[in-house]
Amino acid sequence: MSPRTAPPGPPAGASRADLVADAALSLLAERGMRGLTHRAVDEAAGLPQGSTSNLARTRLALLELAVRRLADREARVLALHEMPDPRAGLDALVDALALATHRALTRNRALTLARYELALEATRRPELRAHFDAAGARFREQLGALVTAMGSADPGRHVLSLVAWADGLMFSCVAGTFHAEAPGLAEVRSGLREILDGMLGGPPHR
Image (cartoon, rainbow, N blue to C red; front, side, top):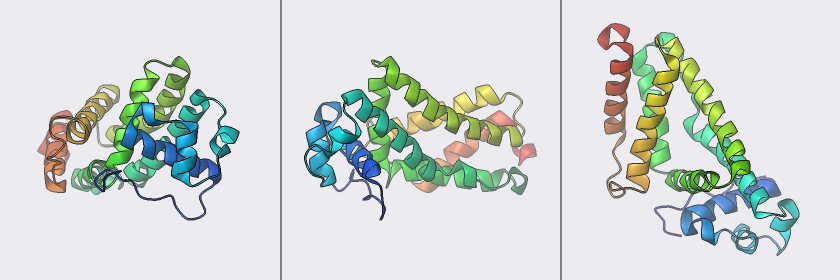
Protein backbone atom coordinates (compact mmCIF):
# COMPACT_ATOMS: atom_id res chain seq x y z
CA MET A 1 0.00 0.00 0.00
CA SER A 2 1.45 3.34 -1.01
CA PRO A 3 2.00 6.06 1.62
CA ARG A 4 -0.38 8.29 -0.31
CA THR A 5 -3.40 6.02 0.06
CA ALA A 6 -2.71 4.33 3.39
CA PRO A 7 -5.46 5.12 5.89
CA PRO A 8 -4.72 5.73 9.54
CA GLY A 9 -4.56 2.65 11.74
CA PRO A 10 -7.51 1.53 13.83
CA PRO A 11 -8.07 3.30 17.13
CA ALA A 12 -6.85 1.75 20.33
CA GLY A 13 -9.41 -0.62 21.82
CA ALA A 14 -11.16 -1.28 18.49
CA SER A 15 -13.37 -4.35 18.50
CA ARG A 16 -12.51 -7.37 16.39
CA ALA A 17 -15.39 -6.50 14.07
CA ASP A 18 -13.94 -3.01 13.60
CA LEU A 19 -10.48 -4.44 12.95
CA VAL A 20 -11.89 -6.73 10.28
CA ALA A 21 -13.95 -3.96 8.70
CA ASP A 22 -11.01 -1.52 8.72
CA ALA A 23 -8.80 -4.14 7.09
CA ALA A 24 -11.48 -4.74 4.47
CA LEU A 25 -11.69 -1.03 3.68
CA SER A 26 -7.90 -0.81 3.40
CA LEU A 27 -7.84 -3.76 0.99
CA LEU A 28 -10.58 -2.24 -1.13
CA ALA A 29 -8.58 0.97 -1.45
CA GLU A 30 -5.32 -0.86 -2.17
CA ARG A 31 -6.39 -3.83 -4.31
CA GLY A 32 -9.96 -3.22 -5.37
CA MET A 33 -12.89 -5.59 -5.06
CA ARG A 34 -10.96 -8.57 -6.44
CA GLY A 35 -8.41 -8.28 -3.67
CA LEU A 36 -11.01 -8.54 -0.93
CA THR A 37 -11.05 -12.09 0.44
CA HIS A 38 -11.59 -13.48 3.91
CA ARG A 39 -8.01 -14.75 4.01
CA ALA A 40 -6.59 -11.40 2.87
CA VAL A 41 -8.60 -9.59 5.56
CA ASP A 42 -7.26 -11.93 8.25
CA GLU A 43 -3.70 -11.22 7.10
CA ALA A 44 -4.21 -7.46 6.82
CA ALA A 45 -5.82 -7.29 10.27
CA GLY A 46 -3.13 -9.48 11.86
CA LEU A 47 -5.73 -12.00 13.01
CA PRO A 48 -5.64 -15.82 13.00
CA GLN A 49 -6.91 -17.47 9.84
CA GLY A 50 -10.65 -17.99 10.03
CA SER A 51 -11.33 -14.92 12.20
CA THR A 52 -13.05 -13.01 9.40
CA SER A 53 -15.15 -16.03 8.43
CA ASN A 54 -16.34 -16.32 12.02
CA LEU A 55 -17.62 -12.73 11.90
CA ALA A 56 -18.87 -12.64 8.32
CA ARG A 57 -19.34 -16.06 6.78
CA THR A 58 -20.24 -14.91 3.28
CA ARG A 59 -18.75 -12.30 0.98
CA LEU A 60 -21.99 -10.31 1.17
CA ALA A 61 -21.81 -10.29 4.97
CA LEU A 62 -18.21 -9.01 4.77
CA LEU A 63 -19.24 -6.25 2.37
CA GLU A 64 -22.13 -5.24 4.64
CA LEU A 65 -19.72 -5.08 7.58
CA ALA A 66 -17.44 -2.83 5.51
CA VAL A 67 -20.34 -0.55 4.51
CA ARG A 68 -21.44 -0.08 8.12
CA ARG A 69 -17.89 0.71 9.20
CA LEU A 70 -17.46 3.07 6.24
CA ALA A 71 -20.56 5.00 7.33
CA ASP A 72 -19.26 5.34 10.89
CA ARG A 73 -15.81 6.48 9.81
CA GLU A 74 -17.07 8.91 7.16
CA ALA A 75 -19.45 10.39 9.71
CA ARG A 76 -16.41 11.25 11.83
CA VAL A 77 -14.55 12.68 8.83
CA LEU A 78 -17.46 14.87 7.73
CA ALA A 79 -18.68 15.61 11.26
CA LEU A 80 -21.89 17.24 10.07
CA HIS A 81 -23.31 16.97 13.59
CA GLU A 82 -20.53 19.29 14.75
CA MET A 83 -21.16 22.04 12.19
CA PRO A 84 -21.52 25.60 13.52
CA ASP A 85 -24.98 26.93 14.24
CA PRO A 86 -26.32 28.43 10.97
CA ARG A 87 -27.00 31.63 12.91
CA ALA A 88 -23.23 32.08 13.10
CA GLY A 89 -23.32 33.01 9.42
CA LEU A 90 -22.58 31.38 6.09
CA ASP A 91 -18.84 31.99 6.36
CA ALA A 92 -18.52 29.74 9.40
CA LEU A 93 -20.51 26.95 7.75
CA VAL A 94 -18.54 27.20 4.51
CA ASP A 95 -15.30 26.95 6.49
CA ALA A 96 -16.51 23.82 8.31
CA LEU A 97 -17.90 22.12 5.20
CA ALA A 98 -14.76 22.92 3.21
CA LEU A 99 -12.57 21.46 5.95
CA ALA A 100 -14.65 18.26 6.01
CA THR A 101 -14.45 17.92 2.21
CA HIS A 102 -10.72 18.59 2.22
CA ARG A 103 -10.18 15.90 4.89
CA ALA A 104 -11.92 13.39 2.62
CA LEU A 105 -9.63 14.42 -0.24
CA THR A 106 -6.36 14.24 1.65
CA ARG A 107 -5.65 12.19 4.74
CA ASN A 108 -8.83 10.14 4.24
CA ARG A 109 -8.55 9.63 0.49
CA ALA A 110 -8.17 5.84 0.91
CA LEU A 111 -11.51 5.76 2.73
CA THR A 112 -13.04 7.74 -0.13
CA LEU A 113 -11.58 5.31 -2.65
CA ALA A 114 -13.02 2.37 -0.71
CA ARG A 115 -16.43 4.05 -0.85
CA TYR A 116 -16.28 4.15 -4.64
CA GLU A 117 -15.44 0.44 -4.75
CA LEU A 118 -18.42 -0.34 -2.51
CA ALA A 119 -20.74 1.98 -4.44
CA LEU A 120 -19.97 0.19 -7.70
CA GLU A 121 -20.44 -3.22 -6.10
CA ALA A 122 -23.79 -2.05 -4.68
CA THR A 123 -25.05 -1.45 -8.22
CA ARG A 124 -24.74 -5.23 -8.79
CA ARG A 125 -25.95 -6.47 -5.40
CA PRO A 126 -29.44 -5.30 -4.35
CA GLU A 127 -28.86 -6.55 -0.80
CA LEU A 128 -25.75 -4.39 -0.47
CA ARG A 129 -27.53 -1.47 -2.14
CA ALA A 130 -30.02 -1.33 0.73
CA HIS A 131 -27.22 -1.05 3.32
CA PHE A 132 -25.28 1.48 1.24
CA ASP A 133 -28.34 3.68 0.68
CA ALA A 134 -29.32 3.56 4.35
CA ALA A 135 -25.87 4.81 5.31
CA GLY A 136 -26.09 7.62 2.75
CA ALA A 137 -29.55 8.64 3.93
CA ARG A 138 -28.17 9.60 7.34
CA PHE A 139 -25.70 11.98 5.68
CA ARG A 140 -28.34 13.47 3.37
CA GLU A 141 -30.71 14.12 6.27
CA GLN A 142 -28.02 16.01 8.19
CA LEU A 143 -27.08 18.02 5.12
CA GLY A 144 -30.74 18.74 4.45
CA ALA A 145 -31.16 20.15 7.94
CA LEU A 146 -28.14 22.40 7.37
CA VAL A 147 -29.29 23.88 4.06
CA THR A 148 -32.80 24.35 5.44
CA ALA A 149 -31.38 26.29 8.38
CA MET A 150 -29.34 28.38 5.93
CA GLY A 151 -32.54 29.47 4.21
CA SER A 152 -32.79 27.07 1.28
CA ALA A 153 -36.06 27.38 -0.62
CA ASP A 154 -35.68 23.86 -2.04
CA PRO A 155 -33.63 21.68 0.37
CA GLY A 156 -34.04 18.41 -1.55
CA ARG A 157 -32.72 19.86 -4.79
CA HIS A 158 -29.97 21.78 -3.04
CA VAL A 159 -28.77 18.69 -1.14
CA LEU A 160 -28.56 16.83 -4.46
CA SER A 161 -26.54 19.69 -5.98
CA LEU A 162 -24.16 19.86 -3.01
CA VAL A 163 -23.62 16.10 -2.91
CA ALA A 164 -23.10 16.01 -6.69
CA TRP A 165 -20.54 18.83 -6.46
CA ALA A 166 -18.65 17.21 -3.57
CA ASP A 167 -18.75 13.72 -5.08
CA GLY A 168 -17.62 15.06 -8.44
CA LEU A 169 -14.73 16.92 -6.84
CA MET A 170 -13.66 13.93 -4.76
CA PHE A 171 -13.91 11.42 -7.58
CA SER A 172 -11.94 13.66 -9.96
CA CYS A 173 -9.19 14.24 -7.38
CA VAL A 174 -9.03 10.72 -5.93
CA ALA A 175 -9.61 8.48 -8.96
CA GLY A 176 -10.15 10.73 -11.96
CA THR A 177 -8.19 13.06 -14.18
CA PHE A 178 -7.14 15.37 -11.33
CA HIS A 179 -5.83 12.57 -9.08
CA ALA A 180 -2.40 14.21 -8.96
CA GLU A 181 -3.76 17.71 -8.35
CA ALA A 182 -5.84 17.67 -5.17
CA PRO A 183 -6.99 21.24 -4.46
CA GLY A 184 -5.94 23.06 -1.34
CA LEU A 185 -8.34 23.99 1.42
CA ALA A 186 -8.72 27.54 0.10
CA GLU A 187 -9.69 26.25 -3.35
CA VAL A 188 -12.27 23.87 -1.88
CA ARG A 189 -13.68 26.71 0.19
CA SER A 190 -13.95 29.01 -2.85
CA GLY A 191 -15.80 26.38 -4.88
CA LEU A 192 -18.16 25.62 -2.04
CA ARG A 193 -18.83 29.30 -1.42
CA GLU A 194 -19.70 29.81 -5.09
CA ILE A 195 -22.23 26.98 -5.14
CA LEU A 196 -23.84 28.01 -1.84
CA ASP A 197 -24.06 31.64 -2.91
CA GLY A 198 -25.84 30.49 -6.06
CA MET A 199 -28.28 28.38 -4.04
CA LEU A 200 -29.00 30.89 -1.34
CA GLY A 201 -29.05 34.04 -3.40
CA GLY A 202 -25.59 35.41 -2.81
CA PRO A 203 -24.30 38.04 -0.35
CA PRO A 204 -27.66 39.01 1.24
CA HIS A 205 -27.78 35.55 2.87
CA ARG A 206 -24.32 35.82 4.44
